[in-house]
Image (cartoon, rainbow, N blue to C red):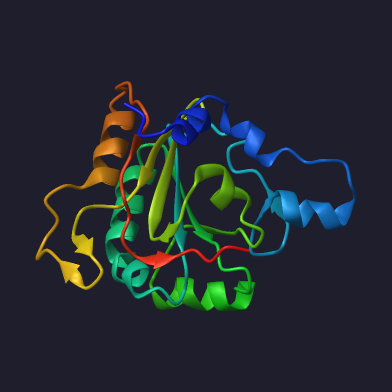
Length: 195
């Protein structure tokens, strides 16, 4: 069941609406699109043939995001082979491609990275925390937004090991061809600063 009307409305349209570009000139491209590390506008869901697409919001300076790096990379390694596309989404407005490249190398990430300096995807999905995962199914419908797992109970309070692996469960259901309805959970981590 949807927790509130805002999440219900997000589930209604396909994600293609997230990345529409108004024909307002080149300056508007950067404000209406996600960017790759070369600064080029990108729509990861356009013409995607992925079984599912995962956007994992992160920041280079978020310790909780960084603690999840090995697990996130293992998820990528497991599910990319099953047709799932993964993107790290850097939502810090002043994170440069050089800083992001250094972060990817330092934490051994071997997946695509995107920049969301104007919070295009942040606003459309309602993401508020890093790390926070957003998952779309093969039809570009939002099916999950929330924590990676439940290891972090609250700020400064963790379990020795997670008891529920929310993101992995959603991905497993999608690759098995199961119908998945929108689910949201509360992520614990660093707040995404409002612009």
